[in-house]
Structures are given as C-alpha cells and as structure tokens.
Image (cartoon, rainbow, N blue to C red; front, top):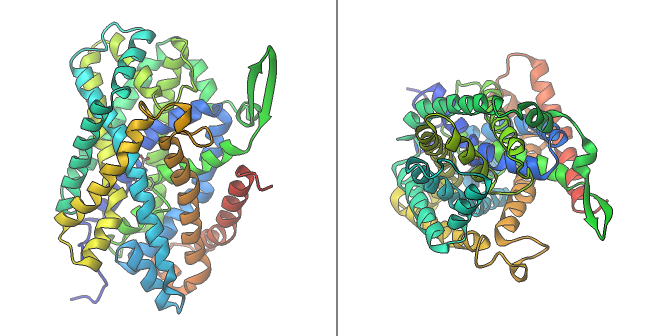
Length: 470
Ligand code: TRP
C-alpha cells in the first residue's frame, strides 16, 4: 500500500509512457506543417535561431514547471491550479489559468483539426497516384481544389474530429501507446527519406543556407517594391512568432502537458523527460525544414507562400521519386497520426474537468467538448474560401490567422509565464524541489533562476515589443 496521490483518471502504465505521450502531443502539425511555413514567411535562418533559443531558455524550463504542477495536483488543470493555490494560501482565482487553457485548447483544436483534415485528404490523393508527374502549377491546382471547397474541408474536418473524440472517450492511455511507440519512429525514418530525396534536388545547400544561415536583416525588415521603390519596414513580430511557436510546438501554456503530468508516476524524472521531449520535437521540425526548403528552391517556389507550403512542395517530390505513391501515402498517414496524438492533448484538459466537476462520463464529455470545437472549426474552413476576401479580415488577418495569432502568440506565452511565476515564486521551494528531485542542487538552482527571472522577463519584453508598446 502506498499513500501516493494519484489521478482519478488513472496513471500512465510505465515510466516511458509519459515521455511517449508527451512527445506524441508535442510532435504534430506544428513541426511538419507550421514550422516550415512560418520559417519561410519570416526570412529563414535567423528566425530558426531565435526559435531554438526560445526552446532552450523558455520552453524547457516552463515544460518542467508545467509537468511538476500537474503531478503535484493530480487533477484537471483548472482544479490543479485551484488546489495548489489553496495549499499555499493563495487566491483560488488561479483556477482561471486552467480555464484560459481550456479555452486556448479548444480554439487551437478548432483549426488544427481542419489542417489535419487536409493531411487526411492527401493520404487518398497520394494513394490514388494523383501526384504523378505534376509540375508546380499542377500541385497548386490540386491544393486549391481542396481548400476552395467548404464541403470537402467540412467532411475531412468532421472525420478528424470524430477520430479525436473516439480516442479521448476511451481515456487517453488506451490506444495511444502503440501509435506513439511504433508510428512516431516510422515518421522519423520517413522524414530521413525525404531529406535524402532533398539532397538530390540540386538545391540542398541553398535550402540549408536558407534554414540555418542567420540573416537578421531578412527577418526584421520586410521589404516591398512600391512604385519601383523598395520600401522596408522594421518589425519585432518575427521574434514574437518564434517565441509563440516554441510554446506551440512543445504543447506548453494551456495545460496539455500539465494534465499529462498529472498521470505521471512519481519516480519518473521530470527534467530528463522534458529534455528528451524537446530534443525529439526539435529534431523532427528541423528535418521537416531540411526536406522542404530544397524542394522549394529547386522548383522555384516561394518560401513565404503560407499554410499551403508542405502541401505544395512534398507532392512534387512524391510525384517524381521511385515508389512515390507508396511513400506519399505513408507520409500523410503518419502525419495524420502525429496530428491525432496532438489533438487529443488539446481537448483532454476540458474533458478531465467535465468528468471531475460535472460528473460526465468520458464519452459524454468528449462528445460535448468535441462538438463545440467542431462548430468553431467552420470559421477556419471559411477562412480559406468564402471568407478569404479582404472584407472578412481584421488587421489583414483571416479568422484562421486571428485564431492562430491569438492562441500561439498571446494566450500560450501568457499561460506559460503564469505557470512559471506560480512554480518559481509562489509555490514553496520545498514543494518544487521535492517534485523535480534533481540530481544536483546546481541544476535546481538554474531551473529556478530561469523560471523566476528569465522566462517572465523575456516573454513580457518580446510581447510588449511586438505589440508595439515600446
Ligand atoms: N504541439 C503540437 C504540435 O506541434 C500541437 C499541440 C498539442 C499543442 N497540444 C498542444 C499546442 C497544447 C499548444 C498547446 O503540433
């Protein structure tokens, strides 16, 4: 018998399982779809460097903070934050942080599912051999025939949401293990195959140069030719986007990692797990970049072409390479799985709360929250067709752009910093030291320094700068 506190939703079956599940949450569309296109939009190398620095100095310490709060509280993020605050004599309003996370998760999932739907559609297109012999015009037409059709997008979005609700209803632990244990390594291997193909495009070094050579000027200055004159504008926004993406890609700031931490066995090392997850996640993103940019340059495509980037580059490669039909279908299947293991973590905090506080069954909780998210997804669907025009935009952003900006660049960093402040300043030192249980006091002190001083300062400076306050 042990008096160890456990979650009512159960616990991961093994030590490795937490790492697998959290890595499954982290590795997703953010790495393979979003990272390449925002890197392309934000000038390349220098953007990648800022992103890597953010992962190291902000992402890893905040991940440790989030996991430790989750494991300490052992409940849904809303109740965890409220309980932990009460335990230290703080205001129960900290539960609001959990609510913001539930909201952010729903908003993100609503567009995440639409994009995952694109990947689903591409499984069938690849398998049908539609990529064969396509040129750049052909892949563009193929992509447009999908995104210009609200009906098609709705159908795929519905299927993906259904898949997500199906797994969440069973409890996250079941069905996740096999997907992460076998399919994620396979995705990794397939990414290597794609990089191998990229090496033979003739533009590999150009792609690598774009991805890794720091040209800070290209990142912070946006130049446009107007009336024959080149006009350049300076903006801090790319730094905010790089930082926001560090949160997004590691699934931080909304309670996903906290709720996974609440199912974590007591003995597992939080620090080691966090570092491994960050390494796996970053590697997949960099491999995606190394596969995609050489294809972009070899075919004279535009790196900054936006959310359709991977859907308009990879099919060119699959259309030309031997066994491209097989590799193409397999690649998009694995991408769907990667998105699937991420999407369930976006909705789990809401479901855990409905079960704890409203007495819902898991099935009912999944259907209830899934339906709300599904409905909101329609706004993103229309962003690519009916509402793509300027009159439906706000600050030059479509509904989808706005959702993405608000969640990734505002809500997640804000949530993350509040988590850091809670773990670093408010929670007792004994509690965090005991929970992290680091091998060396110096490691603990470095972590504490990072979450107390570095992360809050960095996040606020970046955010205020980019929003034009300074
Ligand atoms: N990290 C995932 C990706 O890169 C997306 C994701 C899953 C996420 N859970 C999250 C993002 C929680 C922010 C918060 O695709």
